[in-house]
Length: 57
Image 1 (cartoon, rainbow, N blue to C red):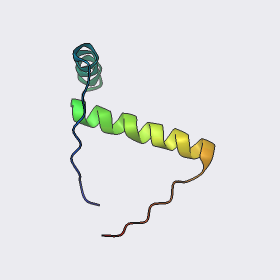
Image 2 (image 1 turned 30 degrees about the horizontal axis):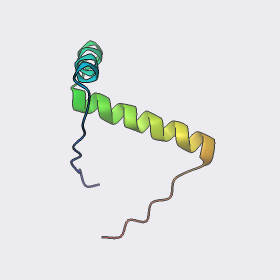
Image 3 (image 1 turned 30 degrees about the vertical axis):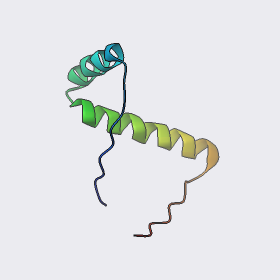
């Protein structure tokens, strides 16, 4: 699995709160975002079925 980079725009207060949550959980902000994205996708797939990915390079 390749690791890709993603740049996002985020409100300064929201970013600060993300860092507080991440520190509390003992994670980096990047790791926390990955977990939140993973959890969101898992929830979506439970409701709508597995998302099929066609991995063509």
